[in-house]
Amino acid sequence: MDQSEHGVPTVRRAGVADAAALVAVDALAAAGDEGRRASIARWCGGNAVVLLAEDPTGPLGYAVLEYTFFEQGFLTLLTVAPTARRRGVGRRLLAAVEAECATPKLFTSTNVSHHPMQRLLQGAGWEPAGLLHGLDEGDPELFFRRARRTGHVLH
Image (cartoon, rainbow, N blue to C red; front, side, top):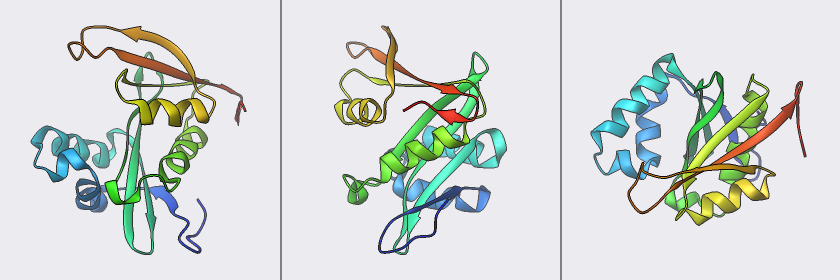
């Protein structure tokens, strides 16, 4: 995407060499969650499109796009380093995922309790697509969808 100017983050595809940087900005992975670290290694190894947001200070967050949800795009994870939150990094990553997605529909999900992610999605024009109980007891999963026209994100 664009070059970083005046603190505006760039977003680029991440690869295997970026795995340590992703671990550093991912609160779960940084805290030692081996499952998340294994997922990061798998994603960076080519099993997903991983988009990394960074500025001159370093990595700020990342997003993972996969095509394993009924063969449609699925935003598996979007995370921003705690020190980079509320600066537009999540929105920039979300826009990059939308631009990168190669299918007519793009989905994601978040827990009902995760209000910041819901606000981010709704502010970017995503629509609620359903509710699933049973993944996390007492905290249902809310699915969102972003419909696309051929090559153009709906606004």
